[in-house]
Length: 243
Image 1 (cartoon, helix red, strand yellow):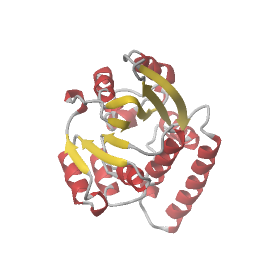
Image 2 (cartoon, one colour; image 1 turned 120 degrees about the horizontal axis):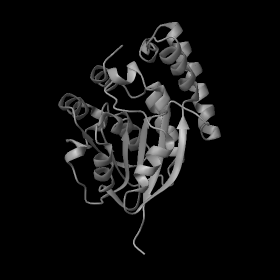
Image 3 (cartoon, helix red, strand yellow; image 1 turned 120 degrees about the vertical axis):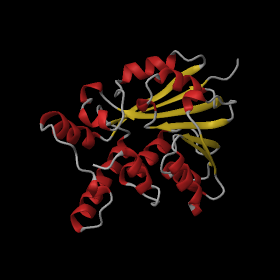
Image 4 (cartoon, helix red, strand yellow; image 1 turned 60 degrees about the vertical axis):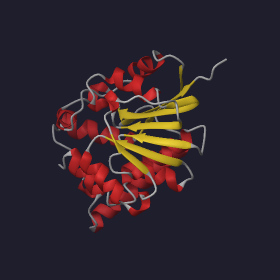
C-alpha cells in the first residue's frame, strides 16, 4: 500500500484519477452554484484545483505538506493558481470565497471542531463549505490508522458539528461510492486484509478494465444522486446571509 504522501505525489503528475475525478464531478452536480471563487484547503495532489478551474471557477489552494505545494507549483496547468502552505488549525479566513472545499482533510485532525470553525471563516456570506470524509464509524480499522485517520464519520455526527457553527445551514448530505463501501467492508472488516488500490495507477489490461467498470458504476451513482450507504460522506453547508 502506498502511504498517503507517496500517493498524493503520484497523483500530482496526473490530470485524472478514478476516485478523485468522479468525486469532483459528484460534488459539482450537488453544488448550488457553478462558478465563483474557490479554495481547496488540503489541496494535496491538485486534481480538484484542475477540475474546478477547467469548469470556470477561480481557484486557489492551501496545502500542509511542503513537497506537495512544490509539485503543484511546478504543474503547468496550475501555473496561474495561487497555492500556499498552511495548517488549517492555525489559519483564519476573511469570508472571501464562494466555495471552500476540504476533501479528506478533517479526519486527519485530532480537534476537528477547530478545523471546521477555521474553514468556515473562509466562506463568504451566502457561500458554501464542502466537506468529504470517510463514512461510517463502524468501518474504522487498521487502514484508517495507517492513513492517519482519527475517525470516520457518521452522518449525524458531522451534521451536528456543522450546525454548531454560527450561521451554518446544512443544505445537502450524500453518501458516495456504494461499491467501495461493500468492497471495504468485505476486505477490511471480514477478511482483515487491505484493499489493493494499484489498479488506480497501473496500465495493464486488467487494471484498465477494472477502472472502466468502476467509472461506469460511479457515473450511474452520480445520475441517481447517491446511495443509502457509501465509502465517502459528502456534506455541503451554506453560510447564512445577514438578514
